[in-house]
Figure 1 (cartoon, rainbow, N blue to C red):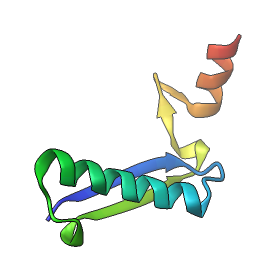
Figure 2 (spheres, rainbow, N blue to C red):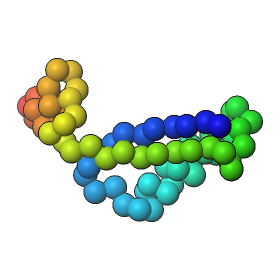
Figure 3 (tube, rainbow, N blue to C red):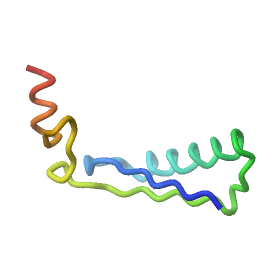
Figure 4 (tube, rainbow, N blue to C red):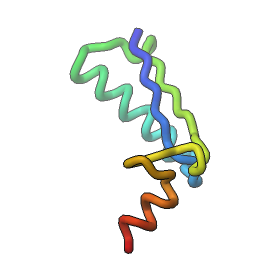
Length: 68
């Protein structure tokens, strides 16, 4: 019974995009590990940008640093 937890920033991913992620991850587990899709769980958690860090910085600061 695979469980996959996907974390993304809360920036407006659509329901269609989330459905595609769920279907794609499930398909990958079926193809690569021969898992049963009926018992494969995929959870998508959305995190506010202010609560996500990269390289020791909050995402906004990391992006600003990367661009400039």
